[in-house]
Length: 430
Image 1 (cartoon, one colour):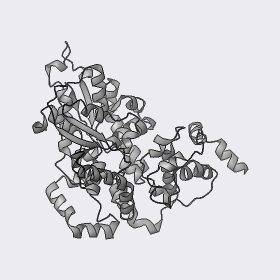
Image 2 (cartoon, rainbow, N blue to C red):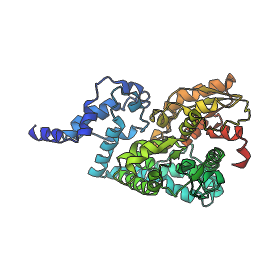
Image 3 (tube, one colour):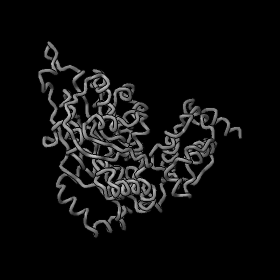
Image 4 (tube, rainbow, N blue to C red):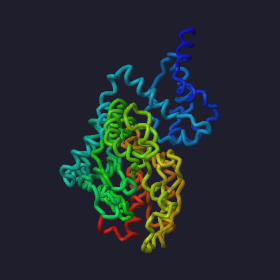
């Protein structure tokens, strides 16, 4: 008991404050999408604050159920005390991984190693995307992947496109220049496209760039690595930190100039805002405050009167799904507010919970059915709305949510930037 007291007493103050803030209300467990459909998962409170006290006391716990946390952060959004529950769960997984390597888990370890490296997969997939997609569509390929590494044969794997590329220009427009011929930082933006845009949906990345350029900004796209979220959720924590350090090194000179960083992927945006400030690297102290979700940035422009609103009418009714990692940013739904500025656009917010894919969670053989159950209420809401002709399709910022909603409901699902591009008359130019 004396040793136990020393361990707890020596705890990092911030970590202790986070732990002690839990008031045992159980709101996190009540809202957890996994607990709702999988009773064997004890829930965020039990596996987070409750188990954390035991872990700090040196009590060994069976950690298998920790992998069922999807990192959706619904628990943190729900918590009235601001407890960082997901952080506890991820740290517990990291400690377990460092403590031992289970020989019985080699098959899944290989799969998690691959899924954590979306960037490496993307580089291979975009060498010859048409061939890659044809191979991945074959049932024999999918069955082989399921038998060999545990990648579900039924999961909706994303297709590959030509790699997203953007030419950086120091001063593309005369109005970007100040009197001394130096580019004005206020008219420059750093765009963090993320792996899905870079390797699976380059056209949407080009649409984002076109919209920003239409509003008078020079868009800078350094050679970023993956934001690190896939690595973290698949148990590769050191590699995730290494990616963050690399990306911060690229961002630092722009951050020092006060140039904002824009992310169109909600998971990348959350990582930049929430995870990167805690990395011991230059630029970490600035990146959180200077990072914006794409639509969050546009809404700020609108509030300042700087957003171009030369919109053409787009007569369409759409349903909007808010990704979990957007909710975790605490910025509301700026995409909905922006879309409602466009004449003719009608937007219905679904508010039907998590889609279930959660990055790579739903791609795994043993979790595929669970992911479909988590997303079932959302899929049902979409299908009912389509049948009743309340809307014609679904929009959401998250690429993973897009493919999961399309897979689970059959509805066409795209990024809302396409509505903006069409309203600006840019769709054919993207």
